[in-house]
Image (tube, rainbow, N blue to C red; front, side, top):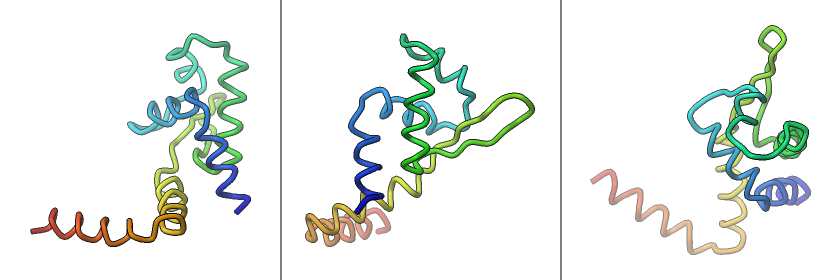
Length: 103
């Protein structure tokens, strides 16, 4: 449950949700992320640290830059686990929706 708490704490902030949206297209450097917001670079760094501690993003070094990437699978698994526990009927709903898309 601690992992889920970290994920939901990370998702509670609109800036962090927007950072995840920005990363859905691919890797971005901290500077590129910061340039898309009207808050300071240190604030963006704190948001990135929270997202990283929740395992929603990963970082890799490229020379002297750090690139951040969305861990979409991790996010999906955590949200699906939560929904499955809180609302078991949603599993049937997802199955039916998936069957309609494949037919």
